[in-house]
Image (tube, rainbow over all chains, first blue to last red):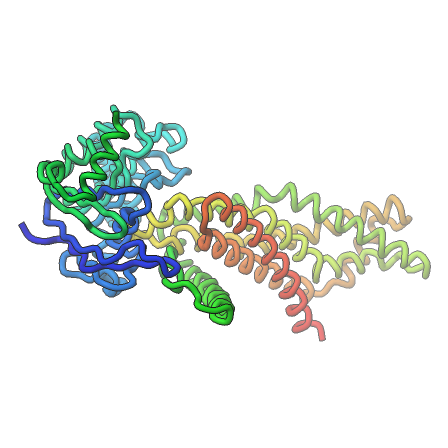
Length: 248
Length: 272
């Protein structure tokens, strides 16, 4: 497998305070990388660097050979066309139905005929098990359904990279499992490279090819779930103990 | 043009002087950013009109700006006309010149008060709603989501709103002048013993085409200012619900001030 995403010694400061302090890791094509860690360690900030919602104070973020921070606007558009992004709240437009939200990127950014768009939307909604809610507005559906609708919108353009910002936060365990299964299913069936920022360690252990632990703005561990749980690094042990304490 | 902006500086200011300089630079940067929103939105007007979804958005905005504000604008302009007629009429009566009441009311409304009443009504009803709506979208990551999907928030959100305001403001300003003149006529005929027909003929005899066009130009400029300021405030929203409230308040204040300033400047240019 080849490296699709590379974070090279990325430092990001806000008001003089480093949130990311020399983060280095890479993601291979078709891989699911889960980023875990305590709140405020820069997990979502890491994700935002991949689509230039934020730019690093120093260091570089490379996606498929393109430096995201310095590439031209045209290159950025091409790059963003390949990336789906699931925001914490779904970020659905309130005045559109679920189906219209999912169709939005196709209607606005492609010249596909209406019929083809309808087929793709239906396919995406079926993948996230949301066909029955196609004509509902975001305020009429639950938080879990909103996230699934956001996921359908993120993959409807057949993106090969999908970034998930806390896809299971605030959801009940059953819905969390459904979302995690969907992430894995999309990864397996469509070969989507996924980066998942999550607080759900059990979910991360179930779906990740590798788990990255961020602490104090640094990547302290990046390994397979089996290696992660066996790691003897004090930061990992401390994190696992804290998560264990939280679940018991 | 990128809407989701990062802070200009990664580090904290080292001194008060540096902090002051940064505030100044931030202010100038925001001014430049607002001007870029205006220019980019105007450049996106053809795209709004060409695309089917753009035309639908534009029609929806025309309805919001033009039809939904009608009740407020009708009441505001009616009372402005009535107040004007009462104040001016009482003074004219002292000199037995009530026959000029229609002319005085009509001229004031066409040149100043019609566009002004329309401007403040639009700033309060539409501008604040635009700032609040876009601000909420910003804090809910909807604007960021659009940018990531390569959908320009300028073309998709700003341009239809700005275009609708520029198109509807002159029409509403003319409507304000008509309703205000009628309100003045009602006061004239019921309280100042000026026959309605005499009032109307006096109004029509004095008004010139220039007065109408300057008023319409003013209203168009007000529409452009309200749209630009409200969109910029909405797009610039930070800090959650508090930020949305602040942006909404700020858009109304800035719009009111700009309406007064530009109103004076346009009058100064055309009536020397």
